[in-house]
Image (cartoon, rainbow, N blue to C red; front, side, top):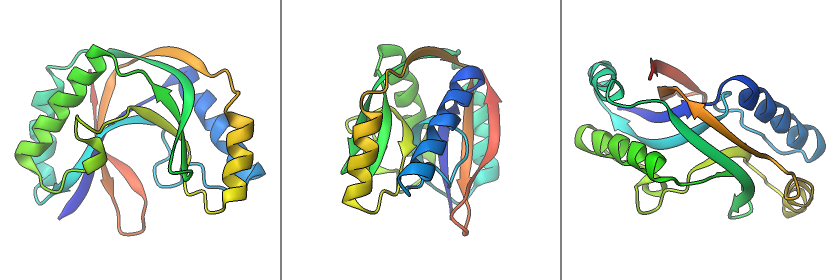
Length: 177
């Protein structure tokens, strides 16, 4: 069984700005920014499948029904003082894309990620993960929480990503909307 995820990668200026933001925690707080998957993104869902090839084909049909959509980013949040993220506003349009992807994977895969089911999903862009020490979290949070990071971007892609045994996550297939 392969573990796959469905994300939408940021592009252009937003991509470059987030990559710069990722460099600070690694350099200044001895934290990991985002080493498993090197593209700033919004995650929709992840699950396990025994037929990644077939899923890629079916995903092509699904993504042909999705139009580019806008995200609105502003403010920071954290999950259990281990992950710091940029907040992405859960608009009706974004929630509909998420529900469509979740239903698609629910019908074809198993072991969907609990935190990403519609009732639990908090759209975000990870800035810092794997914060191992409370002191590192406090330093990173204190500095980053006042960042005036706010933007709107139209996202025009959906990507299927795959987890590998070495812990890396790579694009299995990208779909232009």
